[in-house]
Length: 390
Image (cartoon, rainbow, N blue to C red; front, side, top):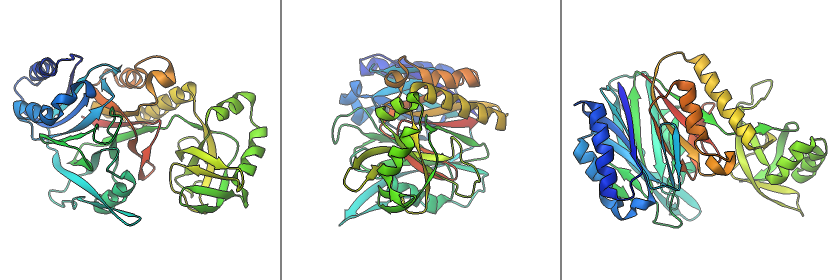
């Protein structure tokens, strides 16, 4: 199996396509393309209807999937606010691939996800992973992920929400030569080579844990039998001055993913944004639905914590999996990059430094998909990475 990545920063679309295809063909040296991922910035929006079809036809690749981006990632670089096309291709592989398109229909207060394929039983393969890209205004990853789990079991789901547009209809998806303006597109990859997840949420826990005792949807009224804000204020007083300042910049709430563990540490939580609070009831709202009985802990995020967390997750993966790596796909939040770290290329450069300049492609997304424990979630401010074993 071989993976190659090429990109272009040319603002003229035809020139950018020629540059990418010329370099990719040189890399391939006559080999055919089995799978391609394509990410394109909005500088090329006039050509969104045809760009994926032209690339797929000229490369004669079997499957092509991707979406629009505000920023592309190519190898160790993140090209923020620049025109960009990046193409990730895989050749000489025996992957069994199954592409699909999802539609979302609203019925009263309920959203239904249609189009998730059934799992294929033959031929038997050891590993399965799903890649999913969502249009931001017409999809619901929260509804899609349980349906994918129902069909394929506890397999990792990678990808994210297309970025770069500023309103409905401006961000789009690509699937096998077509521009798709609604719903979601995905591909199931079944293989004998592991596709490993690294999901760095960039947060660390503060204070102590609480048990949620009263909640409705994504609103937490009580933890530990008392109003949530009352418990939060008491915890806040015991924090260091540095952590208090980070809380003032915006607290987060982590929900334990495995309640059977005796001790909870960084990485044991699904971290959600705290959206606001109600001074009358003492409730807080978070960005994920939650039910009573779950264990939670407040978290903070800053550049140093995010840097530490990504390095820790990568180092853990390298210790656990000594197998050679062919390449990676990276889906990182549009709130990271220069906004968080103060300089460009942090996530992509860290990945390539640790794995030895492997071919990497990806994008800054409006929400990132990746597993925590045995479940898949839609994240924010996260770097979600798919590592392809050779």
